[in-house]
Image 1 (spheres, rainbow, N blue to C red):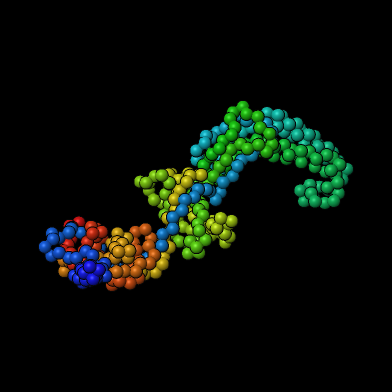
Image 2 (image 1 turned 30 degrees about the horizontal axis):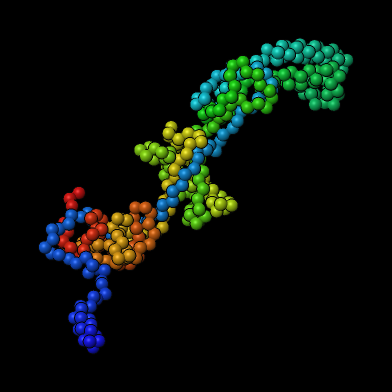
Length: 353
């Protein structure tokens, strides 16, 4: 009985067909009777490749200053609002200076009295006939000091400087922000009044990984737009500096100048920078031309109406295009849609644009 069972087992094993090792291409056999699959196509070309680096940072101004009070007093008039554009030298606000004007009158009176006293003193020195020519003469200097003229001149000059400080003027043309005072406010010396920044150019500061920063150089063109505004107009800048220091987080600071920022970009705004780093010519295909089949990267090419399966080796990508290191040749027509389930030698039909 045991012999019969063993014999039956041997016969069954001999009659069972053996499965050959599968070929990934044969996993999807062609069928010439199938209807043609509609596909989109593109061309594998040797093109200038740009490595894309994206980062988000904040808009700053290379020229921004906090205006502070030089002396204490009451704010008499504020002539600007936040967001106002001002010109260099324009009066921004004025402190009450009634007391200073009174002090100036007194100083002018003392100066007149000192000049009279000085003229009387000169009567005793007929040789000193020209005060202008001999102003630096040692005797003349002593006489001016003795008459009180020099002291009166300095006192008036000091009062005029204080009156000048009561008018706060724009140090450069720019935009007003962070106004902290209003009419009637009392301020002390050193208090913040308002701030002003130069509208053009602006500076976008971003931080990049050190391996990304090493790809950059000054002058590379950069696309910039505010974050969260998908349809916002793209503005252009260029890399102004690359800080030669990696911080504790492994990041490098990069400054991007925006020479002609539009009104959409304002101080402190979050903005996204897209940096296109030139990286030579590469054989490129659209990213959606590459599919994963049997764990490997595959590109289907179009040849005489049939889809041809090609194993490829890919390199870098920039989010849009993908580098092909080997597997297809330049000018190959590659299939970019409906290629996930295509079979080798499957009939295809190119969709009209």
